[in-house]
Image (cartoon, rainbow, N blue to C red):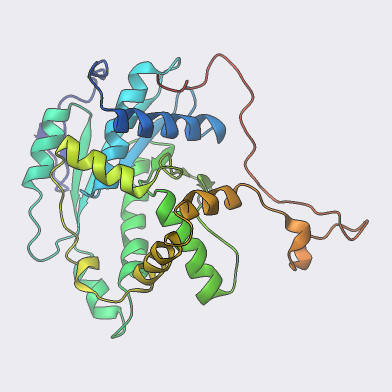
Length: 298
């Protein structure tokens, strides 16, 4: 490993090919891998020649994403590159040593950036408000700069099904709009495609897998320092609904893929012709079958 002058640590194994996937994979790992690859294929998230930057926070979701995507790279019928990037945000009590050791053993090329976002987030967030919005904006800008420098055209985030469902409810109850998390979108400046390969994976499965895999989880001392966040309330609401319908999370995910715009009240969806005709903007379409797609893992 080498250290550069901008406090970035790069793995010396940058050109190393991924190891073949282990033969004794757990059933939960196979379940997650199949779901992830199906999402990648359905929404055409990764193609030949892509260079994907995986944002690794040190949480269970991003560890799982990097692990499964690195394995999928070995099985893909086309070539694409993966590089992991972790941002040390200079939070009090932060210890990134376990993550660094794990990345060094894992074998994928990686960089560790260090930039203080903690101080401005705490200083400029009004009392009682969540840190998440400002923290996300600052972190996103740093990651975009890193992605451009590394020659990455895609940025992979570890959001999962439950994140999307909670976002749907947050927007519904507090923002007055029907909006969740897409599997992929292009940044406003057009430079990058942001993808979420785990967006159809259940958080419970990811948590169980992460425990089995023994990832060295880094706590977020910023988000974890706030109580009664609205997102936590949305999660609790869904959990409460599960008492009546144990499959409510799967049903909600199906609803996000089964939209009836003609039965909503947004006039922007109405065509100029018949009232029931609608124009649905930018909905992802399933990829056409072809030889150069990721295939679902057995």
